[in-house]
Amino acid sequence: MTRYGMSVPIAGTRLSEHQELFRELVDLGYTDAWSSEADGSDGFTPLALAAAWAPELRLGVAIIPAYTRGPALLAQSTAALADAAPGRFVLGVGSSSNVIVERWNGIPFEEPYKRTRDVVRFLKLALGGERVEESFDTFEVKGFRLGIVPAEQPPILIAALREGMLRLAGREGDGAIINWLSADDVKTVAPIVHAQGEGKEIVARIFVCPSTDTDTVRAQARRAIAAYLNVPVYAAFHEWIGRGEVLRPMWDAWAAGDRKKALEVIPDEVVDDIIIHGPPEACREHIARYVEAGVTTPALSIMGFADVDPRQAIRDLAPT
Image 1 (cartoon, one colour):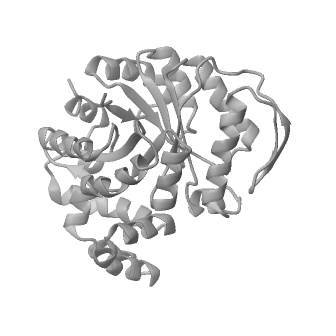
Image 2 (spheres, rainbow, N blue to C red):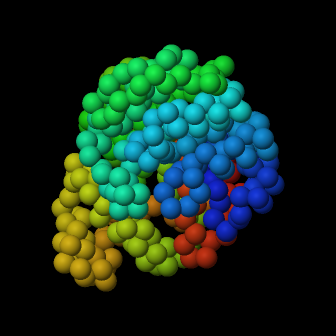
């Protein structure tokens, strides 16, 4: 089954005003609501509201960083939401980035692969009700047992960019969460996940702006692209995926402190590949290309470029 998700919370709408929005998502045919955790809401609160206000929706977080909560607290938060929405919650966990972990939270961004792997292994033990007394490579847990064990174990997806994390997602997770990539890039990353096991879910956060004001969308999208694709983990991913040559001028200008030039040298084709824009029907067709390439759950993220109204964009992109 191909699902169809929307990223929440919606920009410009306070969390206290989301009840009507969640109900509209259901009415429009969306199956999922996906939160995230960077510099806005935390990953769990919007989903707790959705659990009560829209019990028809599956709820996912893409992602919770593996560093910013202690293992026991992360298990508690996961168990609580899984208990509030039995069989409807999906946890996404990943390394995040040095910007979020180290620069914003003051936590050393060390051994991201091992930290993510260890958190996933710990969560599987803890969410199963076991008493955890174990030394992992990146942390130690002494005698923790969850007081609330979910009746149904939530799937754990792993945020993955390059081969190591993609293999981990397929081998030890229930699938992968991917983002900042094109539909054609999915053809490279999805098989790596599936090679580790059958039936793995591939969730893609897909950035969409249903607007025909192409020049404005591209100009504003370049700022978003530069902000992310100069972060080391994303730069390394795009180098690996084969986009190094076209992005090298941006990386060089950014490193030299020339932000204006860095924006100017991002090619139109890069913008058009990783940020979907155009008339709504063209956007839906582009989203379908991700599904054809191997994505099982598109999780749309509305980009408010060119003064696009996020609420109207949700309606324009609806599957029904």
